[in-house]
Image 1: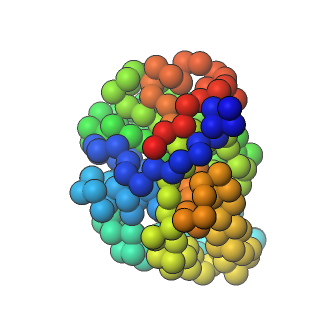
Image 2 (image 1 turned 135 degrees about the vertical axis):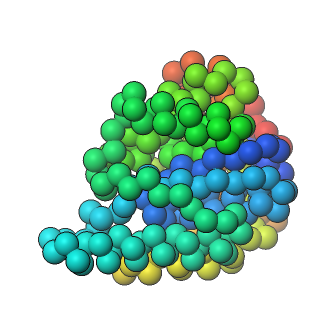
Image 3 (image 1 turned 90 degrees about the horizontal axis):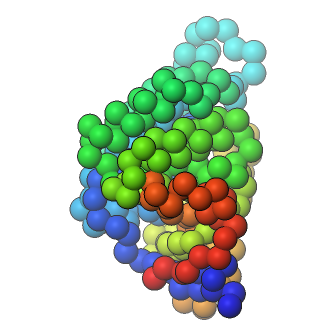
Length: 243
C-alpha cells in the first residue's frame, strides 16, 4: 500500500508537551516548521526556539562593523518572525556560520536544554540536509534525543532537501500567515526566493492529501528508541501514516 510509504491523511493536532525548535540559522525556524510552531502555540504548548549560528556567512568579505550589523539584522528578522508566530523571543547561541560541528559539547548542551526545559518534542533539520550546519545540527539532535529514550521525540523537518515523512501537518489555514512570517527575512529573500521555494514545497506535500488540503509541512517523527533503527532515521522503512 502506498500509505505505508507516505501519509495519505494529514494531521491537524500535534502532541501536547513542551517543544524545542532548533534552527541552524536565523530563518530556518520559519522556513522549516512555522506551521508546526503556530499549531503548538494554538494548543497552548510551551515553545522554545534556539538559533544556533549567527548567519554571518551570507555576507561577502565584510569589515567588522558591517559584519556585526548584518548579524544583528538577521537576529531582528527572527525576532520579528517570532512576534507573528506568537511563541515569544528566540534564543541565540552565536556559533559562527558554517562552523557548527556535531561533537560532545554541543550534544551535551542540547541534552541539558531538553532536561532543563522539560522538553517532550524537539524539532531539528532532517539528516538528509546537505548544508553542513543543517547536517551537524541534525546529527547532534539525534544524539541528544537518543539519550532520552521514549520520553522525547525528534521531529525532523525539511528545508533544502525533501525528506521521507511519516507525518504531514495540514497548514492550509495558516499558509498565508506562514508567508508573512517568511517575508520577515528580507536580507535572505534578497539573495534567493526561499519563500517561493518553500511555498512550492509545502504545496507539493499536499499531493497525497486530497483536494481540501492546499499545503502541508512534512516531518519524520521518531522517539529516542525508534531513532536506534538507522533505516527509520532516514525514513526509508515502511511506516504507518498518522492522522
